[in-house]
Length: 309
Image (tube, rainbow, N blue to C red; front, side):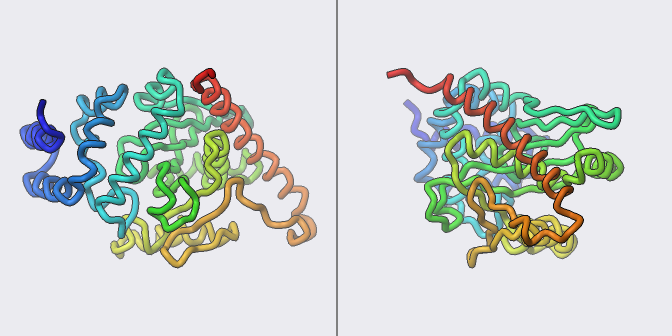
């Protein structure tokens, strides 16, 4: 039987043979990344033999190597840490979700929450991150009339990777609107009780975490985002992450991640200005509705997949 390292090299050569996949320099970087994470390769190979991961890897050879790239998840992670995140996420899903649901998530998107208002349809979906797949393994998307306008990407990772005492956390690595969809984003915010896409999708993610018994989330910041050293994106990253979580009162750890329990604690209504409390209650009620929809859906699915004793 071929060794895991031999299988890794064979897959790398297959990828190298596809000229449209990656440049020669990129192949060399992937090979070096594989060498620095050599202890994880047997586990990666075993994981990629499972369905539907094997099907994904056959269709996109880059799937097996994404964790060795410096752009994967967060700036400052070591290759072994990135490998640990990749393994944890996909092992957790495979062990927790029904196989049919896992296949649907990996190969498509699943609508979990939908509401019609002001003559438009607003939908929140979950699925595997694509086409940008190195900024988080799963994506929550807000759709307006069936068109994606905003995305939040996250990964289930071991807590130690972000220096958390929790066994596992949901790590947010992408919060981004779709280019050219500003009007639809504004429409959604106005129609949905002034709840912007970022907090809306954050509520959905927390519902997912609650269903899986994950009690903490973390997010990259302007110092740990993959574009943290890119001056061109610096202002956007600081606003989308530091500004957003600071406004919510989510603290930043000394290690460059924002961190919060799930569910996140809301600011006391006593601190809300007079005249804003009714609107604040409406916004919170709507976010709780979305959170509950995700929690309920995945709680039922996880219960169905649980072994009977």
